[in-house]
Structures are given as C-alpha cells and as structure tokens.
Amino acid sequence: MDLTIPVVQGHNLYLGIPTVSLRSKRLQFKYLVERVVKHIQGWVTKMLLRWRIPMSFCEDIENGVSQFLVGVEMGKKKMHWKSWDYLCKPKLIGGLGFQKMDEFNRALIAQQLWCLLQNQDFLSFGVLKERYFKHGRLLEASLGSNP
Image (tube, one colour):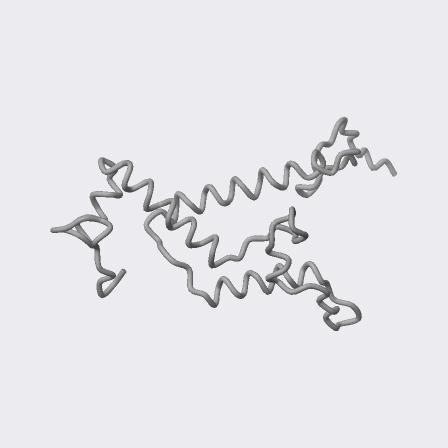
C-alpha cells in the first residue's frame, strides 16, 4: 500500500506557529506581535465612532491576562506573587509594563478626540457634529441621551 504523501520544502508556519525555532525570542514571536497589531488596527477602524468600553469588560480582560500569567495547577489557581497594580508599573521600576485596560481605553479615546480636532474635514467629524454638537464645539458637547 503506497501512501504517496507529498514532501513539502520549507514550511514556515504550521497552524499559525513558526516551525523553526530561532535563537532570538524577539524574532521568533515577531509574527505574533504583527498579528496582534493587525487585529488592533482593524478594531480601531471598525470602532472609530465607539467610545468608552464598560469597566466590567476592562476588568474581565485584566483578569484573563492575570490568570494566564499565573496559570492553573491541578484545577486550582496558583498564587499571585505580585499585585496587578505592581505588574502594571513600568519595567524600569520593577513592573512588567502591562497596561491597565481602562487607562488604555481612555488613551485611545483621547487619541480619537485629537484626530477629530486635527481633521475637522473628515466625514466622521461631520457625522459626530450633526449628532452631538450641532450648534457648538466638540469639546463643549454634552453626553446626550444616546451617546
């Protein structure tokens, strides 16, 4: 019985993971960073008119990251050796440099606001002006009944 399985030369990825182990971890996981950045950029363009993410979602994301870092052993969570606040400190002062999701979300909102203020000829600026601050300025707009 002949299986005739073709030989493929030079698989770079298998199930989205590099098949070759590189000496440099930075190079080895570069594809992962590129994929995450690509997805985030897609989210930004899709969510341009969306604003603040609910705090409960931010907490859920932070809990998921925290549990991933700590792990599970025999069905039980392992002990957290450092608080999430400590892990969110910059690397230069001993933390791991993680972002708090609520602060990150506020930074993205500020970036969107800055973009709108700098590009008032964009269609998105016109739409927001008609919806939220028809007779005023962007920075003076009230929240409204359906933000």
